[in-house]
Amino acid sequence: MQIRDNISLKPYNTFGIDVKAKHFVSINNIEDLKDILNLSEYPEKLIIGGGSNILLTQDFKGLVVHINIKGINIVSEDEDSVIIKANAGENWHEFVLYCINKGYGGVENLSLIPGNVGTAPIQNIGAYGVELKDTFVSCEAISIESLSLQSFAKTDCNFDYRNSIFKQEAKNKYIITSVNFKLTKKNHKLNINYGAISSELEAMQISHPTIKTISEAVINIRQSKLPNPKEIGNSGSFFKNPVISKTHYNTLIKNFEELPCYRVSDDLVKVPAGWLIEKAGFKGKRFGDYGVHKKQALVLVNYGNANGTDILNLSRLIQKTVKRLFDISIEAEVNIL
Image 1 (tube, rainbow, N blue to C red):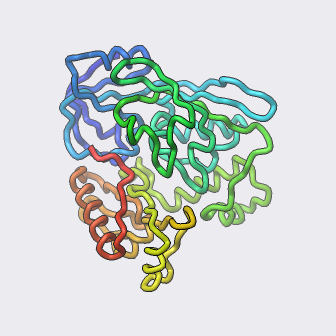
Image 2: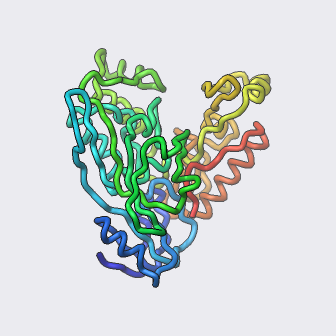
Image 3: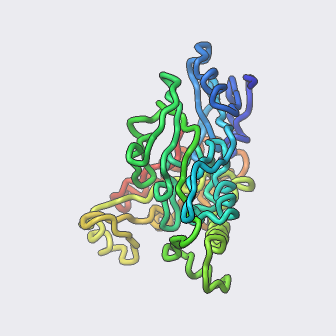
């Protein structure tokens, strides 16, 4: 464990924003993490994982702590299922591929989501009809104040759409160190009825899908729509899909008949933020070195040397325009620092 000074954070955020950390350390085990948290000479600390859900707008004058704790282990299993423990520093997509190669089902629809395992519960990541909470059993997290290792069961986490206790009352109070998942070994519950999965499987000439072919279909769809952060800086979906009242929706479709929606409850529907942003004229719009992706309006991109403030100002302009046109507030999914 070595604390280094004046380190560029460009390799540690998928937007590829080149800001500097005055101090930086990469952590490979829980004991080192406790030691670092206990250092009083660095009162200001920023915890980062895969860097896929942050927009950095300025240099950080404190200590950046990069969680890089690796390891995947079987906790228990029977004929039908397995409980598997993945440490926080494991890359999410590589973990999904590991599960698929072992024949473990439940996370295949979450293929190619950027980021690490440790930050996945914070966001309750989801895609194509599946959310992290569907396979989540528990997680362990270090209390930043007491340095004790605590366990959070699913019921403790208050999971909701792109939300959890770690984004609400427990925000900045814990660092997740590992996550336990319950996955199926046979009789997998295949989810192919959301988005374009069925049509993609048909294009692949797959009539009897498996967890592997579903993963491949999801990867194909995501690669066709979303830019690779290694090629174009981005954080995936920048905005959440807003939930509005049915009354509001019924008013909107008088002027926007094609506005899609998804039922949330008897009184609420979810509308696609990407549709709203595209309708507002931002899809594919470029402003020098940054802009909105040409294939997916939810994705803001850094074409090379943009700074975080540029992208933040663009996001605010999009929010303001959507609010003016549709009277809908869209919320950033990305943490802005």
